[in-house]
Image 1 (cartoon, rainbow, N blue to C red):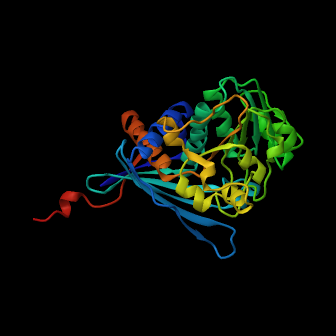
Image 2: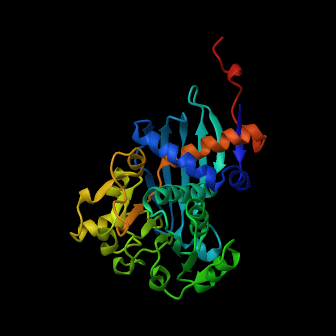
Image 3: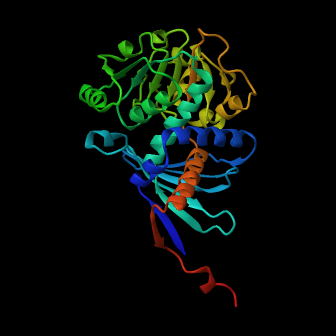
Length: 333
């Protein structure tokens, strides 16, 4: 029995941002039509809290997909030049359960997270939105720039980072002109698209700074004890999430605002998949602030992996590696 191993290079070649946006939209709709089994992720922290490993299993149909992501998160990695998220996505056969493929998770996570923000931006941002502010300058900042370019015509791009040299590097490597800003407030001043992509534990975006009519994609904080947005930013916005259960258990951006008494559970309008299905209204007026809070869920990885696997088979990419015995050799006589 062989398993197909797909590298970072393979994934980025096969999973374009434009394709992933459509894959994510389809997967989110399928999830909210009852086509997914999606437990909360399991997390194991190292004793010194410098890093953790998370397990995100799931099932999705369509496309009929079974698998899981195993990913480590080491927030301090940026200083050493490593991605903070590293791991593998495993795809299994849905008839007999044997492993089909093992893929680099860092590249999948980078692309699919931004693609979901692209789906949310397409559904929630004003049609004329094009003044983009990116807070953060790492992997997610780069993929979010690509996602925003895929769904809106950008007039201006600004970036801010707590490490100015990283912001300068981001601007220098960008395919479009980017203005490096001295503060987060200056970066978001007047912006109608805002993406927060940092490893911050405390708020870096205040509600008072957000212009009327802006749309915000908040993707950096993925634990109950961390947040990128202050209470006012969450309370001012019409809030859409990728998964309500995950938000109520894992999103510091939401939980801190609720703890402050500014919002209740009903502040969550609904899940992005339901919005795509037309089950509730997103943006109702040009001056409303909309917010997509993304935590990342397993079906996003499964749908991406299924697409990548299909493309790899069609194009003959990846390394086919013997893993287990041939089924015929262990069958009952």
